[in-house]
Image (cartoon, rainbow over the protein chains, first blue to last red):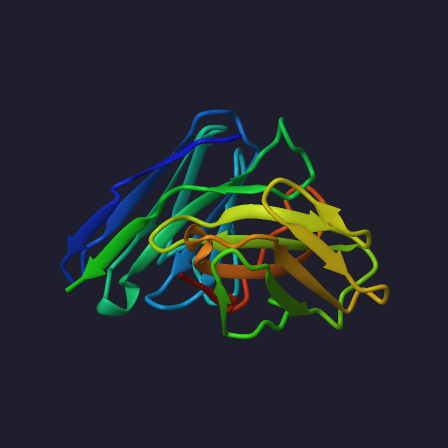
Length: 118
Length: 111
């Protein structure tokens, strides 16, 4: 099973600044997903990151606000730009296991990055 | 978009079976039912999935009605560590298809 590491695990940021969250996977994966979980809420999909192509964003999320990089098959970053208090959330990286369970739909998640914007 | 309906919360006595229902009345023929859970402050964890047959693994059992419009996740002997939010998701099992999480059921296992 894929093991996912996210950095930072938590951060406190000032309004108007930007923060980049890193997601490292211990194996090569094709699909990576970024989710947001606001306090007391369920998970909301932000975008799907494929290696070698631009990320695909869900309705309500735009590249200027949440730019994503996917330079290789084990790494991705999500930047939260020009932050406001409404961006205070847990941001989660997840992957679908290409090799051990292709097509079965088992997603693996990182522990998340808890972001607080003051 | 989430296509499932779940009760917002449930309680279960420790050692008893926890039966978590999910309604997915608009499910398509090629959509699977997936269950995940999220223990507080952790990333979601895969539990089980199925298409139309009942499924069982080391964590839980999944029963799907014959018309596939609803399903039940069964934790046969709930423990305090099973206290979590449980999410039921329907999804076409094509590699790379997105998962859309609904509101889930908050299960509290009571000593």
